[in-house]
Length: 269
Ligand SMILES: O=C(O)c1ccccc1NCC(=O)[C@H](O)[C@H](O)COP(=O)(O)O
Image (cartoon, rainbow, N blue to C red; front, side, top):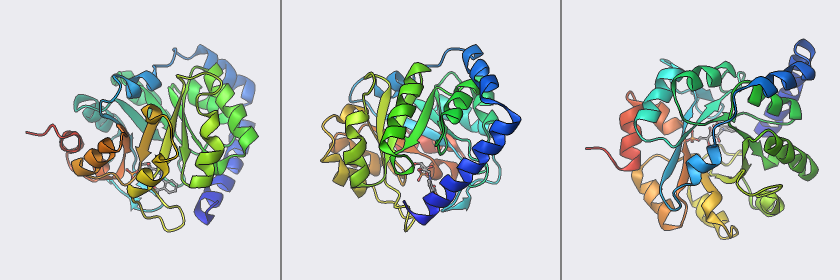
């Protein structure tokens, strides 16, 4: 694991322990059970087959870029994404490194009909109940943050709660390790994300998706994440058979995020 990731994961474990003391697991489980049923994130990004699907990200800051957008209104951004062609949303909920908030998910879902992914560093089942209780429809599981048995347990729990899991890999070894678990315990609940960000250098390169994709037999569930900035990037990925992308920083840096999304999709006037 890179130094950056291991620092984030250590902090996350401490954060979960602190939160658990103030809100016991039983309370979070009850809230998860009472939450409105999840929207189908998997279907929103995989259907129809072969059509470009953008998961647009709501992100104020990041470790690699610092503050990306000073004038940050998560609900207005989500609404603009919805009105301009996003298939689904990703919302950063990590506070320390991304200035996100769990509450943003609920606020967004009140006004936007799209399914929402909780983008965070999940290391404990508690966070999956917490995500569902907060209204999330999908969660992120980063292979480099989890052991294999832990990944399987978290996938089972996510599926029980009817959440889509985006299983993300950064490197080749993780891809080989998790590949057989994507589609487990049931197909139709998991997506496979290839993250183009090198967490040692913090640089991005969409060539990374092209490289790892050779090992992926089913590109219908594949999402390319990070460093996607232009319609040419999207065309390049589409030619290689990748029709789902997750885009944050490029959109968040533009004054008009809706227009930027249309340009990215290739639908601007
Ligand atoms: O963005 C970072 O600096 C970062 C650092 C450490 C771990 C994860 C990080 N980013 C999370 C993501 O992968 C992105 O938010 C997501 O894929 C969108 O990427 P981008 O379009 O490049 O903002």
